[in-house]
Image (cartoon, rainbow, N blue to C red):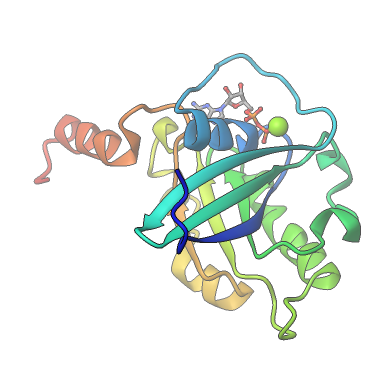
Length: 182
Ligand code: GDP
Ligand code: MG
């Protein structure tokens, strides 16, 4: 039951990036706590709602916008981006080309959308499929913090839509395999 004094905030968040990087899977994992290994391209505009009971007075509704099979064009329309408050740009750590596409997605976004205060939309970079090996990024010599700074990302995270226990469990497992201190 909604209390009389409760405030509601609705935020539109974009999830963009190349085809097959795991956008739909990340949204499903976050919103519905499940994962499907079967590939199904998103068709049509799709969004999922995540409700966060932020504190006693505040409810936050996150509207996560999945892109709709237009990935191959490498850009979206202004109408699609309109009124978003934040964005995630996703790449697949096993496919360097999807990382190269990240700057293209960022440029597309920034050229078509600014916040009411004139600033770019806060954007977070997600390095997905880290269950496939967290060293892939390092092996490619990609310095992620530096990359984020230079390209205007507020930060980056390694993610896995596949692992139930998330990346920390994966890291632990890899560290144990290598006999490192954890
Ligand atoms: P989208 O095109 O960006 O929406 O990508 P999908 O979410 O449809 O995922 C593409 C494929 O990658 C599917 O077969 C998923 O099961 C798989 N996938 C997505 N995320 C992960 C992940 O974190 N780890 C692994 N191993 N596979 C993933
Ligand atoms: Mg999809």
